[in-house]
Amino acid sequence: MKKLSVILACSLVMMAGCKPKDNPIKLNQVGFYPQAEKTASIEDDARTNEAALLTMDGKVVWEGKAVREAVSPWSGKTRHIIDFSEVTEPGEYLLRVGESVRKVYIRNHALAEVAQAGMKAYYLQRCGCPIEEQYAGEYAREAAHFDTCVMVHPSAASESRPAGYVFASPYGWYDAGDYNKYIINSGFTIGMLLLGYEADYMYYGAMALNIPESGNDVPDILDEIAYNLRWMQTMQDPEDGGVYHKLTTPNFEGFVMPIDCHQQRYAVQKSAPAALDFAATLAMAARVYKAYPEYATEAENMLRQAERAYAWAVRNPNVLYDQEGNNSKYEPQISTGMYNDSTSWDEFFWASTELYITTGQQSYLEQAKAFMPKRFRLPTWGDIEWLGAYEWLQYASFTDDVNAQEFVEKLRPMLFTYLDDQLGKVSTSCYQMPYGNDPTDFCWGGNAEICCGRGIAMLYGYRLSGDPRYLTGALQTANYILGQNATGYCFVTGLGQKQVMHPHQRISSADGIDAPLPGFLAGGPNPGQHDKESLGAYKYESDFPDESYLDVEPSYASNEIAINWNAYLVHLMAGVDAAF
Image (cartoon, rainbow, N blue to C red; front, side, top):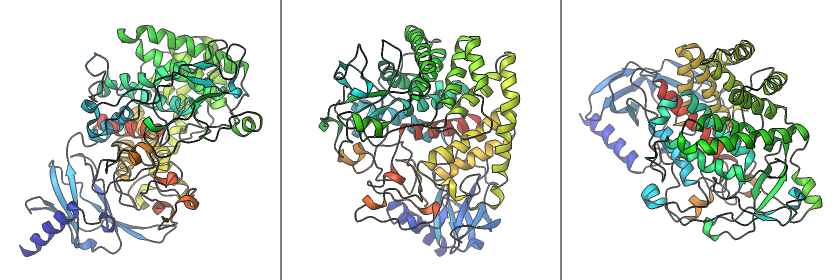
């Protein structure tokens, strides 16, 4: 009885604020599904022969030893895998390993909270409107960046819109930790979100976000996405159909609130990737939104704009964004995020895919066939072809279009070859998952692009085959994000027992509130450490790929947030939750 009292006391101290970074128990801190796999990774110094799961009143419901151990190929550290999957009764528990304790939650809809928080974060990222207390609580703020007086930058000048021409480009989401808006990243973000919606529309239809549009007979996710779509629509030159690459200040604003920003904002250079991402996004949205009378007219306009943007890109396929070249010729010089690309063929594939599925026009089908991927690659904003491939795989599941089956025959083997290779690494993984088994998994935004991205690929494997191995693989990547990782952090702000508290995000830094805006996915361990020369007094504590993370505001290389990263988060967490 004395030993049990010590265990409970330890757990209470831990939850009250003792440093959780020293806890050797690494596990999903949000929740496990009753019938699903439940594992934890234990650092080598813990006594794994003394593992037990207890109810909150001290009853032991499981005891066991580590089922295996794994050695990190780059750090040499040993981790022990604890498997308590046999416990299926929903509830709150304490996992004890030696003298260490971590709280465990087992419940239905275990990841619903993460999916909802990740989607609600977009409301907190809106610009051009007040963020109201009834929807945001203590995170309410004044409206700023109305963008009613945006200037055309000399790099984007045309006959009807010369340099200095002023137009309105309101609405939209701030892109990341900064206050600018970028077509490339907005297109990818909405594409990833709408793919998830198309796959699990009934699930998303029931997701209540408490945003100003809630209750209007349209799913909240679509209302939220529409706020950014309306901005995107303003970024097309009405004369020629080209699309401005970004709306930005010349330099990044300081770490101040939006209301305190005063730089002039510009629409900068048109580019083929921007036009094609715009075309793909609006063609996709036109198809989804036409089902709702409130958006019927907007959907028609979206499709017209998408076709004009695609036609511009066909005429200008090699016009790529060139910030350095622009700065050598034009004033003011622009130093903000580039989202530049070296080719537009992958964007042509995604855009032609969406336009064909929306319109049925043969010309778009021929373009899609011409640019079909040759191998599987996790989609990112700069390598976007597999957003189109996912769309074909999804489309084929509910159509008798023989063209879709032709795409599936070629794309499906690429996907499953990749997935089976990744699943083969789980048995030797330090964290019981198909992620984090190679140092190249850890990079700028790796939590989203590689980890969640791999989980989304697993979801498509499950959707196509029904094989539970792929659903488990997706769930395992979610476990990594939520705490089963080398740092022990739950990487989604506002959640978990060891939380990210200081993301590289201007609002969270300047709003005077201790806790950051909730629901945002941090970029994660990044051995590139691109920011280490600008961290001031801070220093990375480790150069190991899976530990190269700092929860400090200056660490833009490991701790920034971004709308595209949250799109991965939402698609993964909602997709897994819908499957269970």
